[in-house]
Length: 199
View 1 (cartoon, rainbow, N blue to C red):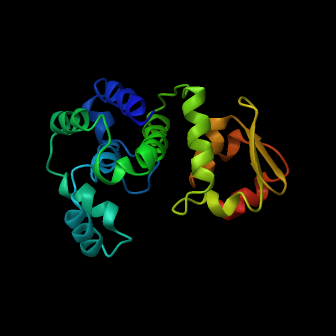
View 2 (spheres, helix red, strand yellow; view 1 turned 60 degrees about the vertical axis):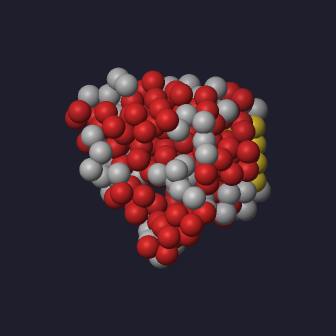
């Protein structure tokens, strides 16, 4: 699934204009090119390299360190690097590729939503990512599903306790990943509480 997601991203990247590569993504402070760089910035690292990056970035800025290391690459070079990483390796291959799948799917949508290029995530992939997101310690979902109940209106999928937040599974995923821009696509008595937590 992670490799399939990366193939889908690679296909999208091949269609982007120079302006789209430089456009802001949904990730605050990151352009589309920065998001692309981030999603593969851990693949080539050895254990020693990974430790060095966490030290250099003081853990919390490790992702930015990886993006900065690729800042000089052209978009053609970024695409080439991306194609070399279609099969996750290194850190992103962790948990059977789950790190690459979750991170890649969310960031794929960060790019597509910012560029107004919607897509339908394959249902089996979306269900798997939703399940994994709810217990991911690095994402807001782990805290959010304890105060609201997410219900996907297009999947028959639900998770959490508390007042309901209903909407398309993709929008729920992005909300669970901390993207408040999707709130207008959601409904239910739990939306105000979710909005409060996201803001």
